[in-house]
Every structure is written in structure tokens, then in C-alpha cells.
Length: 162
Image 1: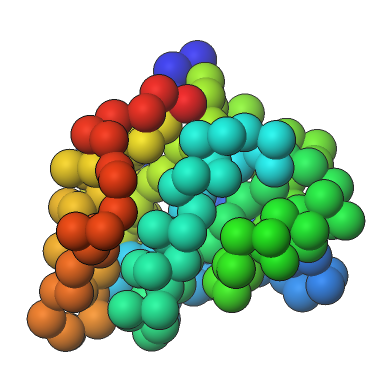
Image 2: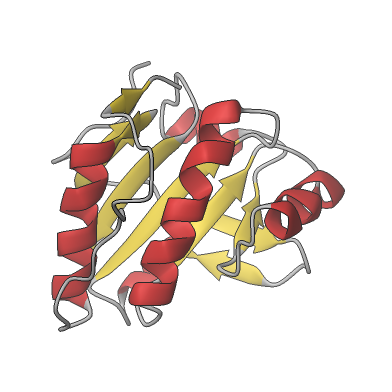
């Protein structure tokens, strides 16, 4: 199976966060124009590099849901969350059912899902230009002006494969 691409119907996610609170993608899409899903493993160096930028997106557009989806256990995911300053929800996919449904080949894998349940954008690994596009999409979803995602002080490569 290949990672789901833009234009594909996103499978529903029914997952719990590290505190046991249940999340449903389709339910959340009834209330929000988009949801950003970011699959990761705590040991993945590219995930560790990317998640602080996802946190910047979350802080810039707090009204737009961003969910991290961990392939590890709750303790490891909680440590990752603390270590990288993540404040958006981290959901648990330790059974890897959602990973299989989304056809993940690598992490990080990011999916921007619209309220029509269609994937608008897929990013596998770190891709600066694609994350800048996500930034614009989240700004539009938040009815806000876009804020810079990367600063001149950041040493950001164009791409880092996952």
C-alpha cells in the first residue's frame, strides 16, 4: 500500500490521547474546516526536527486542530511531547491500525484533511515548501493572516527524508 495522497478520502480516526480522551476525525471535521494529522515515532530524528515547526503552526492558529499520532506507547509519547514542547494533542496508535489505514511508508507523515473528509495535502518526511503551503492553508482555515513559519535564524534544509 502507498501513502494516501491528496484527493483521497481520509479514513476516520478513532483514537485516544495520552490521557485516555477519545478523538474522532470525522466528528472533529464537523466543527473545523481542516484537521492536520502528523504521524510520528519518538525515535525518528526527522520527526524530532519537524515537530517544533508543527508546534509553531499550532501556536499561530490555535483554533485549527493539529493532532500528533504516535506509533509508540503513552509514556514515550508523553516524554516526546515534553522534550519538544508540543502542546497539541498526541493520540496513540500503538496498534498501528491507523498507520496501516493511511498507508504510511515513512514517518513523519503529515496529512491535511478537509471537512469534506478528503486529504488536501500529504507530506512524507520534512519538506519546507510543503510546510509553508500548510501554513497558508491553516491561516485560511483560521480566517487569519499567515504568520512566518520559519525565521531567518532557523537553519532549515529544503527537504529531509523520513
